[in-house]
Length: 394
Image 1 (spheres, rainbow, N blue to C red):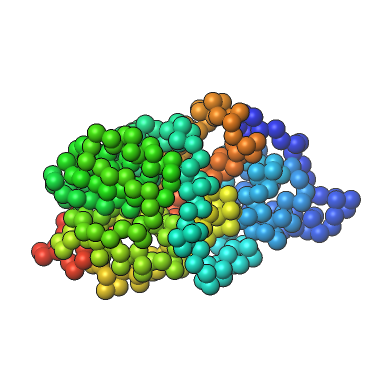
Image 2 (image 1 turned 60 degrees about the vertical axis):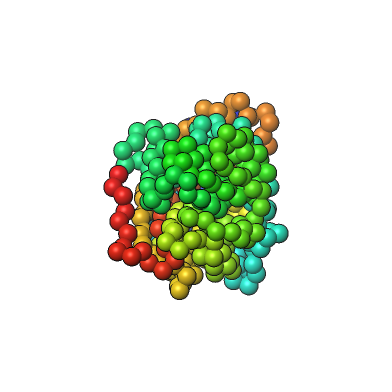
């Protein structure tokens, strides 16, 4: 069933007739065959089957790719009871890679020619996404306000999974009392507070979100934490260690070299840099037109090859840890919180917000469960640690 508050037109049980257009009928039958390869039925009754409400849907998909599919969902043209299972099947079958996506190709060309994450454009994601509402994010993310993947190896709740992730990061960095740590893209201050409280370090956190900075300063007011409202490119001072959790997706390929040069310059000899980022399995653009238009403006999910090229002669990769499967569970926990909290925010949010965020959270949950995206934690050193590095056990 659709979530409360969604009003959808009736389901169309069969392809369009001549009266609705031969072209739409042809596309309908074509997409039916394609979706069947992923064990998805158009008009079926299983949780992951697609229910179509507007016969123009597949024309929109044919011409606009993932952008058209997402926009059509928001507008009520189609529905699936379990969106996460729908996208999991799409990705596992490889249909997402084989489908024509002219919008995605155009976005990739633009990204190759223009720096979409320069200092001016980089602020757009804060205005659209991160400055949305601290109260809303607290309800969805939980009391720690951690907007990155939890670590579920020994956790059965979201709160514990996030605490374990933060502690794992601190131990990977080998933090000791009195050290100075730079947190690039500090969010709402979750790592800064945890590291200062548990490990006795001093933290400088930088963010371009006014709402995040205000919240982080409030929760860290009694700790040796300095939260700065600035771009990461404005930092020029020495730190014992550096951490960046879930911010690299906003850096963009044109800035990877700058990003790692800055980190190397600011990292003390013998220090460690932990980079936590979503990543792609392939060398594609990493830009989805729907995501960049409605959720994370000017974002780009990096491929491993691009990261490694940017690290060349700047850092030694001491450790690379992939726990991307844990992101599906994290996103489903966020979605459950979102559904529970929605009645308290329905009157203050735009009319289409519920369907927009339902699509966003469950889309990514399905993709991560199908292993179409990864979550990597790199531990980097400037020139290699004498004697090597050993990842802490958990």
